[in-house]
Image (tube, rainbow, N blue to C red; front, side, top):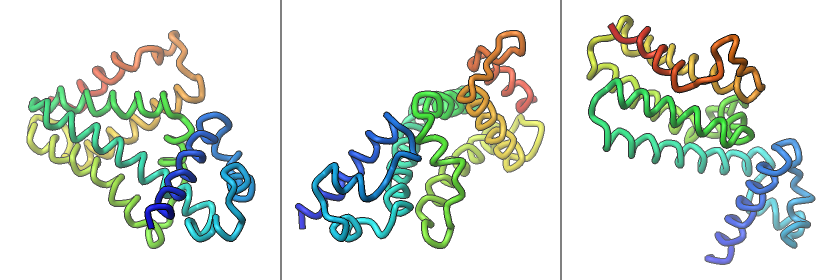
Length: 187
């Protein structure tokens, strides 16, 4: 049984490497199997299809991001500082892992087939919403403010991934933009 799990982890590891080096579109189940000496049928014993393999990677990515944000929430008690740190963590993750970020947030994952992905994404949303509830001094409801924050940070990451970070537009300093954005959220 351990060998089966080792093979599955090897598939995930090699897929991650391909994504990092060549992008998500370079993933091909047949080539992946060849790369790690697995027959086509053996590949499908571990993952039903390419989407299942990619979903396993997305689940790990969310787990990593959730652990990081959970760690921040344990270290920082002041709501505004915590939200600043969470937004920076999101931004840094997206900029440092653009292919993984896009796989996590651009692809619409089927909620019925991959409920754990929806739960993982929602975990951070709820954490931010609770932080805003605790702060109390915000302009909109905690739910609206959280949704606005998500739209902002995803937009900022996408602009920078697309290399639209022109200084003349004020997009070259995410730290300053995040601070200015929080000024809009808090009273």
